[in-house]
Amino acid sequence: MTPGGVNSPVRAFNAVGGTPRFIESARGPYLRDVDGREYVDLVCSWGPMLLGHAHPEVLAAVTAAVSRGTSYGTPTSPEVELAEEIVERSPADQVRLVSSGTEATMSAIRLARGFTGRDLVVKFSGCYHGHVDSLLAAAGSGLATHAVSGTPGVPDAATAGTLVLPYNDTEAVREAFAAHGDQIACLITEAAPGNMGVVPPAPGFNRFLAQTCAEHGALFVSDEVMTGFRVTRFGQYGLDGAVEGWRPDLLTFGKVMGGGFPAAAFGGREDVMRMLSPQGPVYQAGTLSGNPVATTAGLTTLRLATDDVYARIDKTALLLQGAVSSALADADVPHVVQSNGNMFSVFFVEEGVQAVPDFAAARAQHTDRFAAFFHSMLDQGVYLPPSAFEAWFLSSAHDDEAIDRIVSALPAAAHAAGGAAAASERSPR
Image 1 (cartoon, rainbow, N blue to C red):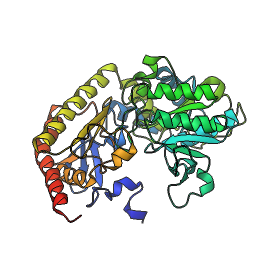
Image 2 (image 1 turned 180 degrees about the vertical axis):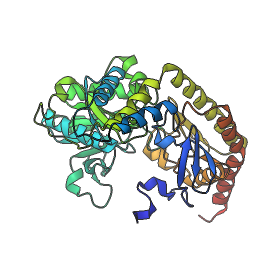
Image 3 (image 1 turned 90 degrees about the vertical axis):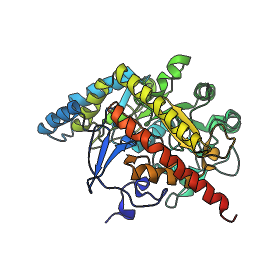
């Protein structure tokens, strides 16, 4: 019926083994599967459910929107209001609404190329920007060489215009721009990566990227599909650019801004955005872009995402990070917990490793230990992301009862990870 039985690969549990859970319903911080089992949810639909599942005010707004019709193919008030809300919360002058994060990054790249008249794109290993052909690229043989295809089905020609660099490596960026600066249309980066596990940008790294792009006439594209309106009211920009006094040329958004519906956006400087059709020559379109039901869900979610909501989630995230680290330490399991705002993840590293700064370090972790940890938590009714390379997400609906259930499951899960570590040490090498 569907390849691998799923419609997005990570759902298949290939990274952790076992059988994926088919979810029937969700409310607040909980999921319920088709067999009636309940789980505390630490995936939150991969970030969008900032307020928890089935928030009554979001449901009421969506129900009212559906009663008026599901799609018109015309401009609507909710899409204008959502665009205004995004502009108010971000450094973008204008935004264009689309239906997925992949569509947003694809369109931003096309716009950057159209605006600059250049072709090369710089990205970082371990940063994910959707399944755009040119961005599904693996690193070439050197720091500043052209990439090769990272998956079958993507022609080498599609990635020939992409340079892949190590994340958090300023010298690699300098080398790439020294060699190709007058050919680079843009540099795109996750504002704070969460797709290799949470690997925060080093202090000043995003500012350095913005400045380097400006010096060479390239555009700086900050991918906030995951972090946007999730880590602060203003997204990752609220943690660095707004504080340090710089802004991206283009940004991409998704997840939270859709409130659980398929909605995304890209935006940025007005002079760049004016290049888009119908005002300019760069073509982009979408039949369901600005869908009235999706934009209503997103607008309602953002309006309910107050400072108090972020403060609550931040406090809960800090508490849970400490609890996870304590449980693993008590079980003598080497690990690193890394966070960015209220997003965090756990790396099962070698003894003595203090930080995970890039994808190479993330890939060096012991994924078998995470798999044991994951299944122990799942068996105890806690649903973690089914991959060691994903962020954990919380919502404002995660109350004391939900957190207590998570914390009470941690000791057994930590010992399961320790058991996996001992088994791997005993196995022949």
